[in-house]
Amino acid sequence: MNLIKLALRSAITPWQRPSLFGSVGSGALPIPITTDFIPLDSHGNVMYTRDGNVNPHWLGLSNQMMQYWSYKFVAPLASVIDRIAEADTNGKLEFLYEDDTTIRNINKIPALSRIKALFKKPNPTQTWEEFNSQQVILSKIFGYCPVLALRPAGMDKSYTTSLWNLHPLIVKPEIQDVNLYDRPLKSVIKRWKYGYGGREYYFDNEDIILVKDGFIDAHEGTFLPKSKLEGLDFYVSNICASLEADNVLLKKKGPLGVFTHDPKPDVAGWEPMKPEMKQALQDDLSQYGLSWGQMQYVISKNPVRWEPMSFNLRDLMTKETARQGVDTICDRFGYPAELMSGKNATYENRSSAERYFYQNNIIPFSLRRMSSYNNFFELKDYKMILDYDHVSVLQEDILKSGQAMKSQADGLDVLWKAGLITFNQVQIELGNDTVEGMDIYYGEWLKTHGKEIAKLAQNVKQVVAPKDSGTKD
Image 1 (tube, helix red, strand yellow):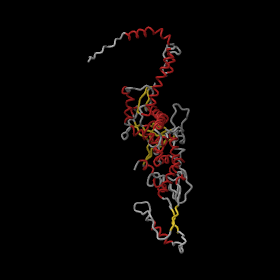
Image 2 (cartoon, one colour; image 1 turned 90 degrees about the vertical axis):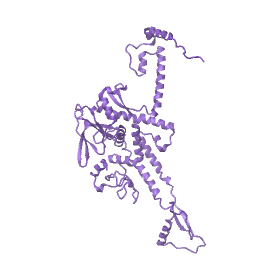
Image 3 (cartoon, one colour; image 1 turned 90 degrees about the horizontal axis):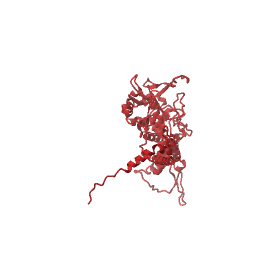
Image 4 (cartoon, helix red, strand yellow; image 1 turned 135 degrees about the vertical axis):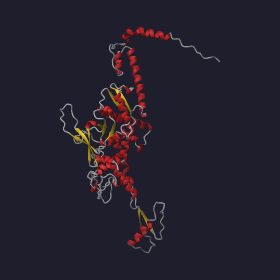
């Protein structure tokens, strides 16, 4: 049994252990009943519709336990989060100088070399890809993910030996009073408590790298962000309810019709069926159905009439309800709905959606996340990023960017040589630093360097091409 189950079972009494999300949750992780769950039947179980319970209570996704269970049992929600994590893992770790130029040989910088080795194998049980995916998933579910960095006492943080993602369900922050006028300003989180098997362990906050996904701090003064699941209560609940309705209708369609007496004029008369006769008829009818071992046709010696009972299942609009929920989840997490399986988007639309996804979701989140690592390792002259330029859908944008840059450079060259702008104005437009003494126009520059250019051109003309050494046939 895994760590989370053991920790939670010890804290929850037997009478608090109903099944969650109907029969799917029975026998799984125990959960206390509250009025925030949806929907509760008269037996205290969730997601059932029997016994006339028509007043559901709605699922409260501000509760961390319910956030975890929603990810576990609501497949569309889990699909969106998992796809975000998979896309994020495409990033390649790079080290840059302050001016954003790439560090080509980090082996000359021992601290960066140690950090690179750490990220390649964050801990004995996980590769970087596994560690990264787990971190993204926890951040998306709970809004944040604390990461424990273990290092020898008294050593620089670049000597960190392992990194561990801590599950927000079982690791909680302890708050301390902070005076905002104190310098240096202390963190409002003093330490993190990990409780398991009746024992408590504590981690210093200075050994924690806090990765945040949410933007608004709303967790009881801890400055921890809200999960993006908060506010999706009705949409997640509606997906569960619509699938439950579909399942009930598939397994229990109710009566398909009624056999009644056919009152023909030539029949002498008829009398109502007795209870034992109805039971006998029901037993006979149980031989018929759509299974392989059942018969499909009824042969009767008495005149009977079949009265079908029909119901248009589309009137329930369960598919539309589920689709609305999925689209809203996609919007909340910044995942293009066009990439979901039910959209049937064209190749062009999918490619455009993927580029949008990387540029407006994956890359911004990776920058925020890697900033947390840069701050922790106290990298002042360097920084780490995750680079996604190699991703195929972004290559088209890189090509277009290069073409645009070439066109811009050609246009500035024309303006420069026409004497309309100075050399430094050209550099500013290209995003480069200006050069001292070069606030001059092309004509002025030629007066200084014209002889050098003429001499260079003369040398080029004097170059003689080598003779063809090939033999004639």
